[in-house]
Image 1: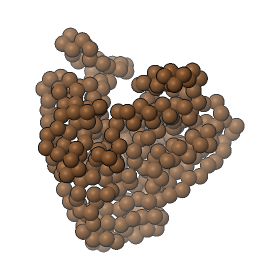
Image 2: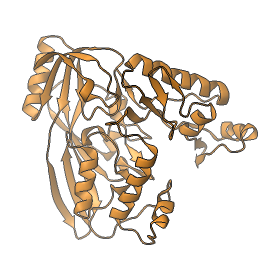
Image 3: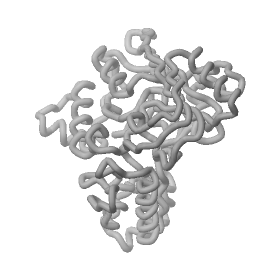
Length: 337
């Protein structure tokens, strides 16, 4: 247990804030011990995984618990399916690479997403036509009130777009211990129709890609558009892509002919990055904070000296300008502390 502990190395924005108390949990027993300490001392707690989806706007007056639960297990199901369980503290991208190395398919489109396995179901992470829910079997969780271990299956998790029960009524009530995925071993379902994957493969002269080649294409695309948090502080996509009623989208098309949209029943998903860019934010810097020059959806700690409040205020200005121009209110994807 550490006191007055700097969290700067533990959040990808690199914001220099402190926690009153800090503990690392390498086992479920250590996790329970930390929770007992917080309850005995009447302290609020906060769980940290990879620190890639959080913005600290002030010091945390409580106990921060860093989840370091590690381990991956494989359980064959039949000649074409396997169950792979990863503990919460496993790095997400390293876990994807582990599966690809064994030729397990299903996660390749989710390559190079920052963070740890334990946080992946919380917001149903997704990219290039794949979401966690597509390959998710279940997760085991610790009930923070009873300290009993429970299992949440696909239905119980109630996944939505960047959403799950863990962000709604289950928020603050559970901590995820491990996640199990069902992956393919031979008849892989290749998804290349989203984003620039197909173009990236064609540039490499690949017509019938393997799951490993799809992963390489995704990594190449992400590296060309998204800054490395080790080089400049960021949390990846800061905003969700908004979904608006079809009628509203049609009305916007009258004014903005080139507005992109992805219809889904009676609504349309609009790329937040495009909206932000149209408002002149791409590459714009105010003080220590900027919108990334290659992807307006990413807010960066440009000087390395930004406070969480500066980053939050910058995001508020973006929200206000998008709402003023398009009548669409952007929602932050990053957790604000």
